[in-house]
Length: 435
Ligand code: ADP
Ligand code: ASP
Ligand code: MG
Image 1 (cartoon, rainbow, N blue to C red):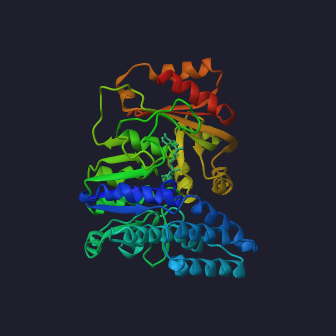
Image 2 (cartoon, rainbow, N blue to C red):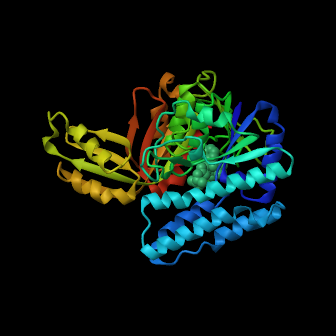
Image 3 (cartoon, rainbow, N blue to C red):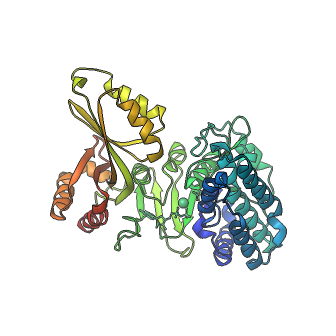
């Protein structure tokens, strides 16, 4: 069987959903299992509602209208989602009454996006004569920890395959969602449906995991920032992990891990251009191509520097720093150390004040906002001399000041921190140099 994951951008309008139907119908002999995201824009609206509901302002009518319009445009019963939309409205009412939106309640609210879209897609497939069934991921056993907002899956013991073998028709699974040990609905973090697709691919031993989106595959840079960005035909698992982790929004950073475990190829394809071959992500590395595969970036990065003279010969210092980061759930993306200081980047602005306060017990801390992280990704960097020199030379000529640089011994990437104002200039210069 194959996993076919359709993102929100592939499910935003009736025409897109009709498109998705044709794509799936043409591949029915490959035994597809679908994983779907919420319709485009819905999760963003729900996030906004979760933010405003405790203050009493939130309005669910926009989300209701969007779903009703889609149902009408697809000639489906307008009452199809009454149960889900009703529950959602009640929940928002409750959040207003108690003036609170705990992470647990927020995840429950976000879950309605995917729960609705799976039902819309399944109903449309059935109307078109292709038997299908909407399935909530948490009902078939996608279990996670209780880290609401970015829950991590717990190992599957075979129950997902067992539960799914009982289903009739094409399963249309909700992406993004899981369930903790207490039965609460959890979410896997923004863009988490990609991760769901890979988790289901792993649990069901899929022959391939297909990520259907709105561009012709993974591209050499973010196409919204760099005009000349172009699709990458092949990538290794290692390259795709780095690319996703360091900002390639097209994949959730954890997507590749469940695929790596079982060496399942991941293919990124365009719903609006289904004949395009897209990008294939494979366990092997194609040595014949150029050493650099992509130039990706992450915005709104904080540069944190800790200066601590007594670091000299004080073993366990870095361990202390990372223990504090862990306690505050701050992801450190890039680190540079010297005898007397450590510089690192972090993107969880909401957790930084508390993190930095505790860090202050180890030395003098400074925080600089408005930075960006650029990552030059390519497994070939390890086998080619002088890539770092080219990166720095190119940025020097473009007049971009590099604040931090990092290249590990494995050399799948070169990471750089620059000021955010220089982002477009820097990525464009690097992209034109390497491509
Ligand atoms: P979906 O709804 O299918 O999950 P997303 O919006 O999450 O779609 O991801 C696809 C978008 O990611 C593209 O439209 C593109 O603008 C953006 N993107 C950023 N970096 C890259 C990249 N390196 N390659 C391809 N797309 C990228
Ligand atoms: N709907 C969720 C989001 O917008 C998950 C996803 O689309 O992958 O983040
Ligand atoms: Mg996405």
